[in-house]
Every structure is written in C-alpha cells, then in structure tokens.
Image (cartoon, rainbow, N blue to C red; front, side, top):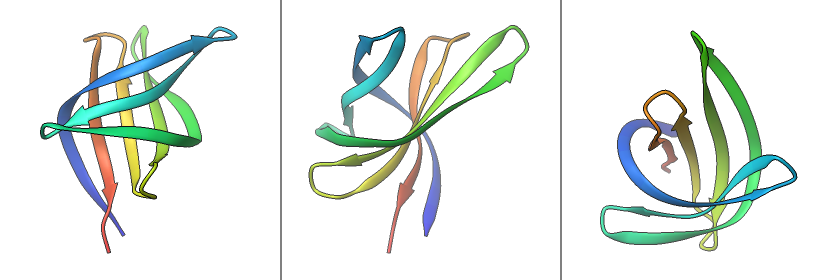
Length: 82
C-alpha cells in the first residue's frame, strides 16, 4: 500500500520534447536513480500546475514525486510500503 508523505527532495530532471522527466532524486541523504516513469499527470492550482510522477527506482521501489510550479519545489508525496 502507499504511504502519504510530504517531504522536500532534490531532483535532477531531464527536459526533452517539451516535457520534464525526473532522472534521480535525493531523499534523506540517499540518491535514488529512477529506472522508469510509470505515469505522469498535472493538476491545476489557480494559474499554476502541479506535476505528478509515478516512478520506479533501480531497486524496484515505487514513489510518487511532485513538482509545484508556483513554489518551484519538488516533494516526495507517496512511497510504496509492504
């Protein structure tokens, strides 16, 4: 099941074909390399958008990352826990 989070993270993202794609992120002092983006969607907050990414790291851990355009911050919003 997913556990809700709301913690700031540092993200390295790639921009290609007018789209942003996270490549790796740092959380709690550890770097996670993303092997796959399994989904992406946007939600509106007024004139700004929040970008959501469902990702899998190279160790097969699942995360949901969020980029808030208004505040220009990344957060880890969900993690998969067993």
